[in-house]
Image 1 (cartoon, rainbow, N blue to C red):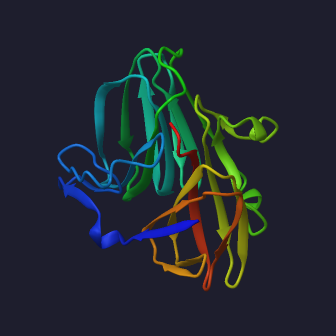
Image 2 (cartoon, rainbow, N blue to C red; image 1 turned 30 degrees about the horizontal axis):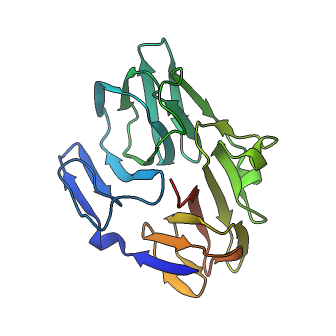
Length: 241
């Protein structure tokens, strides 16, 4: 198992005034051949969006786009007639499939901060869809990583939003001194980011908004510890994609 920490201050990105975007992987005008994603995970953007601003209508296709709201709220609208507001701690999923046109706006009076995660689907041409879910905060606390969005068979019975990929987006809220473990199968990887607070991941110190890649060459149990309390978002993906 290999553990690699990507410090937040080394991320690419661009500040557009209304949007301050940090890119964990190559995206838009930021290109690093060594940061092209992990398996089907191709985008992890850390976006800070000013009040009353956002992304006007634009198209996507053949991508699973998961948005985790760290602070504030984001309002979605698309050409399928979907409209919804997703608040801090909750998640929305857009399966772009054969094509969807959408907008994402911060209609709040405060700054909104989101993680936007793009995962390549298991096939092209899926029917486009959008969904969102409010997750009771107690369900994401202390004991285990909670699946927020998943296409893995093992999460069929979990109360998670569906995606068209052999992948899962999970989260946990840890109090001071608490930890969670995650069973990582051989040939798979985790990419995790503390949305709030700092962590110790397999002995490595990880600060808020740092990225961590963990690759497994055999079945392993990954331990995620919180010295002072933290909120962590994790993606589990296959390496062979």
